Length: 440
Image 1 (cartoon, rainbow, N blue to C red):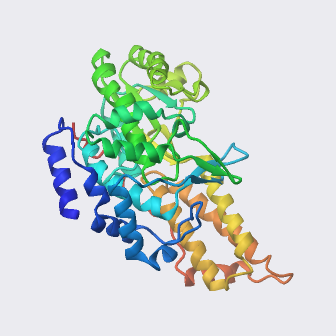
Image 2: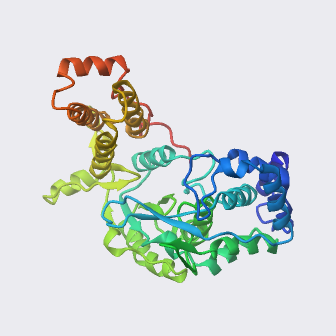
């Protein structure tokens, strides 16, 4: 089956205008479904039927053969997704997720593996979110180097209000039809979109949106914004600009850079109407135009103002200087992200400090802190990382000593225990120097 998927990808890259009329049999193929089953993790949240991977495996071949047969005769019906919430800053209820049943996850993954190569060949370079061989660090890297090396003097930060809940199904299926001519695939995706959400025992119909938490959702969101935003920017906006213009998008987070203020204002004024054509709404309170670049710092001081910064993918970008006084794009950890990371660590320590032996607690805390540093320990962000390590040590020391009335550690003993488990250091893990060569 992997050979067939590779062949589809090669053909999609070679013929970007080709519409595929025979794809469905790849999704329903028994070997492909078996491969998707193996790829799925067994420790994920369960759907409305509460079936885990281990339970599905008890009669694996029978289940997979039955699933394949139902798919082939178009008798497969996705179950409603189970609504759950994860913490979200500024929201009392949290971020809503739609959890699919395990069998639905198999079908979603099978569909994604077949459909994704068709659109990967079309996606613009400005898109980085949830794509093979692409990462947030790559997006941060190209953004920083573009501002550093190109003629970028103005930025437009923008936000789409409730994007995943607002995706219009009819427009999405039209966009998918640009590459998928197999009506059975489109019918299957429509059924997934219309499966509904179960919350508090009640099933609600889903007429719009693609639920976060679904395996297929990131791909569908990229397809939607490819046609709504990326192509429009590259083929319409840039051509109408007097100077240089660049777009950077990670899923539904995006910003644009411009050489001239008039071009930035034109984009800002046109964006709301463009999104509205496709049933999306621009969050005006989170959308702004700001001066940013090699002249922004001096211009701001001349006006008696502080130079502006902006936040993107958890990092604060600001105008800095090298030791030689040369303009340099710098980044530091967002205050909000730093507080969230510390709050999550404190909450975890509060719940597990009496459930785990000290050694295990320290090692698991180290893994959590290591995960934070793997993302945020980038060029020019050592100071924020050192502050984070200092604050996490204080939080850890506090909760270790609250396990009983008698203190567990002195500071000297605590530092020795950290050295014993190999506590992380604030060293640069990802080199994102804005002076590195930028192609194009």
